[in-house]
Amino acid sequence: MEVVPGGVTYPRGFTAAGVACGIKRSGRSDVALILSDRDALAAGLFTTNVVKAAPVLLGAELLRHHPGNVRGILTVSGVANALTGPQGVADNRLLLSRTEEALHLPAESLLPACTGVIGPPLPVGKVLAGLPALSRQMRRGREPDRHAAHAILTTDTHAKMVAVRGRLADGTLVRLGGVAKGSGMIAPRLAAPHATTLAFLTTDARVRPGTLGRLLSHAVDRTFNMVSVDGDTSTNDTVYLLANGAAGGGYAENDPTFRSMVATALERLARAVARDGEGATKLITVTVQGARTASDARSAARAVVGSTLVKAAIFGADPNVGRIACALGYSGARVDPERMDVSLVTSRQEVPLIVAGRPAAGLENGHGRRVRELLLRLDEVPLQIRLHAGRASATAWGCDLSYSYVQINAAYHT
Image 1 (cartoon, rainbow, N blue to C red):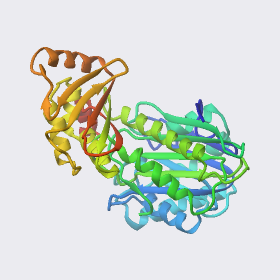
Image 2 (image 1 turned 30 degrees about the vertical axis):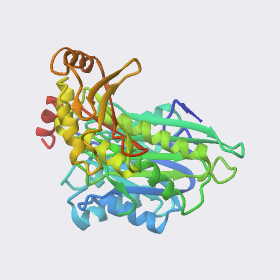
Image 3 (image 1 turned 90 degrees about the vertical axis):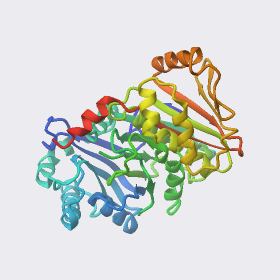
């Protein structure tokens, strides 16, 4: 398996495009379309927020009825189509139907996604007016990958793409591509149907019906569900995986290489979302080792990376280790305060912060100054936590909390 340059059109049979339809005041591209040239098997995971946007409700419904006859994903950026009631679902349904007609696609073969401001209605007319341009630009390659990736962004500062290829046990070469967006309102808690995190994966692997959702759920639980920018779970969080089987060969869902490809792609996209958090200056990686259970490990890692106080301390390069200990204590994981160790672990050194439940020696003077200097230099802050309670481990990703985050979100709607 290897990571290569590319995005959602890297697998065989996929095309994409992104255009500006006048939804964003900036004039930037705001509608993206990803298409398969044949029916694809699809799986989706959606926000667990009780307040669900119209595209989440409709996407879950479509996957329940037509999981094996999906041809693509239509994303509108700039408007969330949330808090819009039954009319919001009707608008999304109309938009998909008209798009399918315009592009000569089978009925109910497109999946919806939206991201942006909550409240305004979906601008169906603007999107429909942009369909001719969208249709003309559909193709494969790095350029359409970038166009589609940019068209789904809101407050993100850069596009997030990934491409992976690997050879299955039977010798079949399969490809997987992905795109994501996310910068604020990021603390995904995605589950099966049931500013926003969106992630779309495409693959030319053959996968049996009924297995794709389990594979996706397992990988997302250890990647996107371990990201926290600001602790807010969006109304629109959506992850889709489309498998069109164009590579041929045997079924891939149980092949270790293919499962590793899915996990690798999602982890890279998850890290990119965390690094691009609104106003972020540093990526925070929290690895918990020695937890009693996998659930404990994930809970502890998420609590630390999601702590507002930990985020603020890292932004200020303040070695305030009590905030890390506090987050571990309320995480719900089994934590022995007298045994936990916390360190900053870089490629060159391991710097102790908490040793056996006590602040590391010298943290209030010389050692503390060295920790502060290190935090100032790092653009990725890798925290390693050892609980000495078992053998389970987990990693979570987040970012620091800067003044810019407040500035961005104080005026997000206006």
